[in-house]
Amino acid sequence: MTHKSVSAGLCVDLSLELESSNRAINRLPVWPSNPPLPGTENLVQATATKCNFPSIPPELIDEIIDYLWDDKDALFDCSFVCRLFYLRTRVHLFHSIELNHRTTFEPSSPNILPYIKKIAIRQNSSIPGLTPFLSSLSNLAALHLDMIKFPDPWSLHRLVCQLRGLTSLDLSDVRWIHRDIPVEPTARSLDGPFPRIKKISIYKTSFHTSVVELLIHRRELRAIYVDSLNELCIKWPPGEYLSSICAFVRVASRSLKSLDLRIRRVKSSINVISSWSIQPDLLPLTMSTLQIEMECRRHGWQTCVVTWLVDSLRNGANGPVMVETLTLVVVPPGLYDGMEVRLEDWEIQFSMLDEILTSPVMKVFRQLKVTLKPHVDCLPS
Image (cartoon, rainbow, N blue to C red):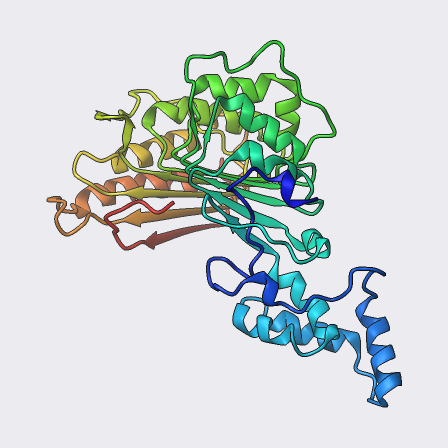
């Protein structure tokens, strides 16, 4: 891959960790790329022979470097010790990188690319310009898109399809430029082999009925997003998305092991407050781990959420309830929210929950966890 494969003005800065270090990658020791670098064990033996040093087990060197996996400055310093250390530091130094419209691309060696396993792309980056680079990363497993605009949902699916080894997808504030075009262009198709996504996280990204129906009924998309999905996290969706969430969970029930829902009253569109359905669809509970976070506010949904959960547990939306661990995260009202927490209301809600959790239908249920989470003024991404 060359510099020309990335559009002008938008490049990749393969620094040690762009979020925590400003040191440029070209300060790293650059070792000859031809012939290919030998393994750690061979280098240890060669060094010990030439310098009459005792042979250090390669496993010990790996343990030393791995212990520093989250200390980028220490890893950077270790990369200058010797070639033995440099080999292992690359595994951690280039594991995760971040790209945005201000980054520059000056790769010191193509040998670095196989070590990149996670990429975050943020705010106004040119996805078409980055696609050839992303496709060249043979070991890329996790992709985080934050404040990115696509022409339409199909453009996102086409990008994901090209990342064959992708297993984790995090969508934060991903939007479509053209909202009126069909979500399933009849003339478009995707070429396999397809990636198998095992973990999806969604925040401020459209998950309405038409989007979910496309994922369910289009064979290629179902193979990518549904059939192998193990973990699903949806943060603060509008109430109007509840039915589509339930439909998606129902289809993914064979593989889904963990579901994390974070619920509070939000805006479904500009200046329009989302509403909770009078009779929401029941949530399929075939996963082993379920976490629900709810924020207590004036005119909030906390009571509706618990009632919805109890109804789903009691009636079994998709066969027997298979939840083993249920975690409820409660966010108390803020200091200026103007709401008093009535213990009587919570007593009623948790009495209903206790009754159903101890009933015979909960054959595999093991534990309930209740956590209080500090209130924050802004929603995290």
